[in-house]
Length: 98
Image (cartoon, rainbow, N blue to C red; front, side):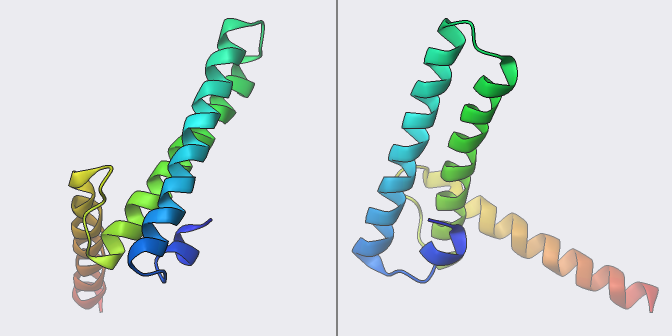
């Protein structure tokens, strides 16, 4: 499930979708750990960890965009604040340069 799909879900649907994303992230991390224990290539381990990070990041951003704190990462509201501030900064830069 992508960030764009999750952000339009409400209440329990968002929690369930993000729960699946976090479950997927944990599976990716377990896979990466097992690969690291074996003779896996570094890029395979990195791909598993990157997949986990992406799932977690997408879910946290979806919560942040909805204005609700994630039950998993309470500080995710900072993501929305940082994004808003970046948008405002870019708009200000455009005004100054025009």
